[in-house]
Length: 134
Image 1 (cartoon, rainbow, N blue to C red):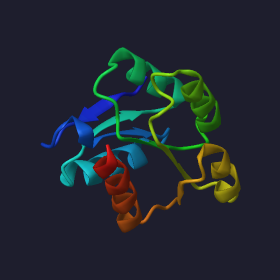
Image 2: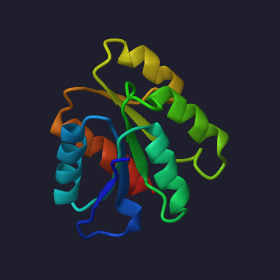
Image 3: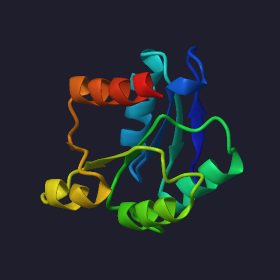
């Protein structure tokens, strides 16, 4: 299991969970969001993400950035399990994927997605929209 946490000021409502099997992408997003004052928790796959979410019931992330293609438990399996858990179902999930059909696949996740390689401005505006509402 590869879990890490990056804390950079801010309060609990600015907590973001990044789920991606690529350590470089996880670290880059954690650094970017940490520099913007968010607290970031990362997980290498869906199973790790569920473990993180269930191990610490509070505070909840204001948003989850979720890769689709991962080993152990992929993004679609994670999302299905998340929706079955009443304590986790209300956390907004944004698909972040290089999948060529990401737009169609994201429709099952309330339709919000970011295509890899992600644009910094798009990531920040997406996170801010969700965390400002939290």
